[in-house]
Length: 303
Image (tube, rainbow, N blue to C red):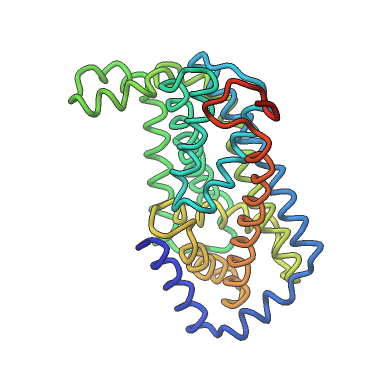
């Protein structure tokens, strides 16, 4: 409730400070064909994390059809519309996969690894973009922390085999938590495929917002979105507000504003993306009603 309230408060402040009328006029400029295209690309793009999760689950010996993992990803999207944060969707994925294969521990491990790897690659891409794609001349106050986080994530990835060997020396709670993801720490090279899919996913998310911007008639190139969207996603990944609402719009104002985008357009772009995420999540209702309940041993569509 606090996170939802904070997100709404930030959004209301931005609407008040930069002019709600101008922002809603900007939203009204969005051409429906572009908005629908962005929603479709985002929704179909969720097959990428489904494939990534399938590969990560196979490392801990949980094997299933790609359609199964895709169904659970879409169910998680639908769940996240009603449960604050991403934890609800991740819990749903763990329960569906774990009960379906009677391997709950391994299912939880695969979901934790999937979420962690997605964030790590997000940090890498944001740092790479801040170093090599900073055509908008973002200030050091923005780029340096992003680069530092990306470097720390890379150091952690490279040191993962060493960390795995030290797990047994750690205190009980940390040892138990580390044991969940130990198979991934021992074999970082097996994560190359999922890492590539994570990079593809982040570029796809940047492209979706590029399409929305084109629908608004904004003349900015794709490279700007490859730079700004990952950095914005780093901030929205922090558990501050519900679904990153408010934080995303504030990040858009700061990042795209430095590239010359009008503040009302930047906020409108963020709100349109929020709407696209919500519509994409609603598509998960189809998977929710056609997939057996977590306790069922049947195949999707059958009880």
